Image (cartoon, rainbow, N blue to C red; front, side):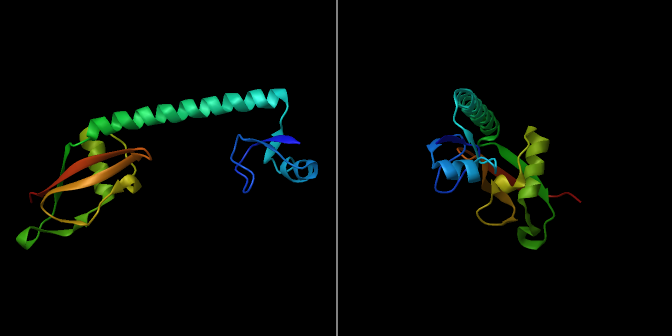
Length: 150
């Protein structure tokens, strides 16, 4: 029996794959649980349309991420922080603060979990930070930490 998988099924395949399974496995397990649909002409056509739509969406998301990366790539991000003696910060600059500054200075919405800081930023000066906008698109941003005026 040929079926089209509606979800990833371990040992069978990924969503959208057309696989050949035993009649009983398909009728008694996959179909009732909504993990697959029977591979008839209409369902195959529908699955092809869904795959095409998903690939178009993925391509659109990649282009959008590339635009954001071009907008922030190698730009200097100004961050002000309270400073103690010898130029040391009280605490450190967090990914949330960097995300807020990206929103304010470049009008770009980035999730704080996508900002990768190699080591905590605890001093004044310029530090490099990697922003993972998309699994395939990364951008380096320079964070310039300046003392906050009291």
